[in-house]
Image (cartoon, rainbow, N blue to C red; front, side, top):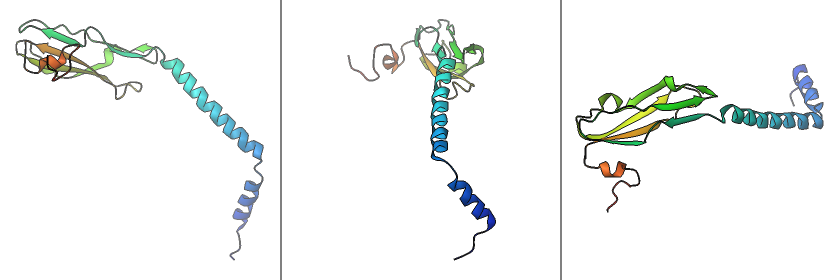
Length: 142
């Protein structure tokens, strides 16, 4: 059997000296810290929201003007609605062209990182628009 170095002997003595109460207290403090973190996070984010303003689905006649209602975004108690990034069909929405458009709203924020909201804008009476009307399912027969 190989001889143990002085470092190994010192380490073994230190491990043997760890009292059971020390381990119990360490686990107790860890659990209390986790619970405290969850409570604090809940308090910091209890009023946070990422909501569409206006209707989720907007129906327009061809040529009718579309008015963007926007979103309301609150992160850690601060209004960050001005940081919204518009995507999807936002840049190609043309109320003179019949179709179904989807506007995607995102924000670069630690709280709302991968979260997004979508508004559907239906212009005219395009094929497939029935499934986007409130209260209907896509492909549902009447």
